[in-house]
Image 1 (cartoon, rainbow, N blue to C red):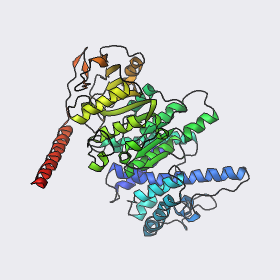
Image 2 (cartoon, rainbow, N blue to C red):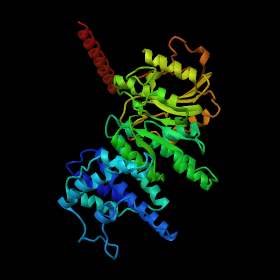
Image 3 (cartoon, one colour):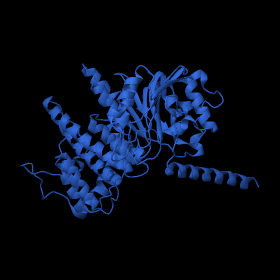
Image 4 (tube, rainbow, N blue to C red):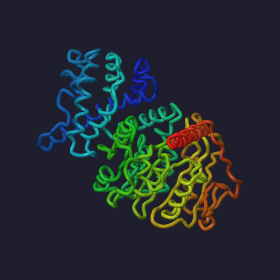
Length: 484
């Protein structure tokens, strides 16, 4: 039922002039799905309060509840067509009344981790792009058929929503921004091994794939107590996200996985000065795939001891700072980080090796990220002691990866198994930190068993580097002209 409903919704949105990409489809489905979910949550809480003999205070006023404007029902539980809005009346209500009302919750909320704040943040950032009230009515009717009150219903719906995120991630060059392959995330989580009571953080949360997989990992532990479940629900998962669409999707994805009020803040993580981070701000575990290839402004770079415009390098500094002593991390980054000769790269490798134990490097093949030609590695490290030995594993599934032949869990099984003992094999080897060149701190993937890996850059990477060099040249010329 869920799969057919999602297909029907996409068919309607395909006809909508305001929705032109898979990103639009997911965004518009998400805000409506969120309100449908909120209606069910409020009904459950109201029923629970009634059984306990107390009055429930609704979050939304009656005219703005799903049951009032989206799907009013008659006494038989059928859609009441006399009270149902459609056409221009429906769009007018949504655009001029509903969205402004919901955005106002941000000012009324007691804090950023409340459901009220999430409502205000979401509806202040996104817009209704379904401009035909008749198309909007059809989408609402399809969504109203969905029921996700039980855990099994939520589980099924979360899988379908993940599929939508995957499709969205494949929709363009920036696919990895929204979608990290779930088999890779699951492998990272299994290596980092989060525990009940750990505070887990992703400062570049995207669609919240890392936090959702970590949630599933912890929920699968045996003999969980009520206190354990409450801790997982309320005090375990934290994230930040800059982009409004990704923020909305992250919230919805976590809700569908079973986290009622996700601790996700809509902010530019890199705007936080590292000098201001205190012990209380730190986390036990960092799991992340920060955006790379971006360029941050000079004022943002001022927040970091190692100044660079490369977004991923700023995030890596942030993650190291955000870890507690003894904290563990699994972070995806471009493989060129290991060997770049610019000052920032060298300084950052030095910082990583001297302040953390970089115990494992997973070298991923091209095609791991569908829709993105960038070749990546995963850094696994623990903060608080310098690196002594680094174990490398060169992932080789024995086939070319791509959209029709993606990475799967079986591809990573050997890595997960060998990583437990850091055993040598044809694909794995160890490097003594004492042998690393102290002038360059070069960490290149050089497999002694299979020859040195050759880094084949994609056309997109080459074009991005050319654009970056052009921008740097233009900045230099501008500075020279200013001096003349």
